[in-house]
Amino acid sequence: MRAVVLDRPGGVAELHLRTLPRPEPGPGWVRIAVEAFGLNRSELHTRLGLAEGVTFPRVLGIEAVGTVDLDPDGVLAPGGRVATMMGGMGRTYDGGYAEYVVVPRAQVIPFESSLPWETLGALPETLQTAYGSLTVGLDLQPGQTLLIRGGTSALGLAATTLAKDVGATVLATTRNPDRLAGLAEHGVDHPLVDDGQVARQVREVFPDGVHAGLELVGTPTLPDTLAATRVHGTVCFTGMLSNEWLVHDFYPISYLPRGVRLAAYGGEAEDLPAAVFQRHVDRIASGDLTPGPVHVYALDDIRTAHDDLEHNRRPGKLVVRTR
Image (tube, rainbow, N blue to C red; front, side, top):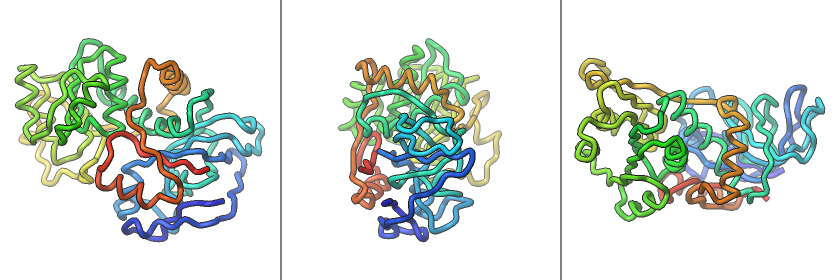
């Protein structure tokens, strides 16, 4: 099979497309014929040497979609469409940047859909993270206001979709004024240009602040997101588009606005119920929802895709087709 191998941390030149033996699944594991996989900041962090617990050489990739190729236990039938994510993929064992991947059966999500593989490839990890952030991280309720910091990212767009589905009012940011119209078309009620003082803009619309904030940029913008949030509101730290995630010299009393709660979210495959994934896929197929912009690359173009990911050149999700 063809696979993308990272021998050691570094630039995109360290990503090598090689021919490897097709992996064999043991008991409790399943081999998936990968049709597409999404790119994530997690893999960028691994490539840059910022992830912990990674051994090299390693096939990257924390998610993939495709069909069951082999289940030695006979639980999953060959040919069934499945998604998989997390659980050590691309870190402690080889991940989805390949034509085949072997993963624990517990992190396989079966589904039915005739959507194109590139559309399906944009969904698993992004949907899991958005769903978990809004439910576990924020407990978002109908009628509440939500600020999404980093709204044109794939995760930001997915969070907008789910938040509007809940019945929330959504504010979302972009640093690029040219992307404001795209946010509005996606359903954002109040698109905002991130000038570093988003809290001021938010409180011009909602003087008391928002009920909830979803921080997807990282620690550089976290204080301003906290400042945009009302007393007894919650900010969930989920994303690190800035590649900065540490708060240095953290003194809670001075860092956190009075009465504002700070939470965080990171999830696994089991945090995305299969019924939620199936419903989302069905609604995209019916035209009721949009996955947002999806930019598709061939496996041979993995270096270009990673470079675009690193420099935030494209809004929405970057997806690689393997076949």
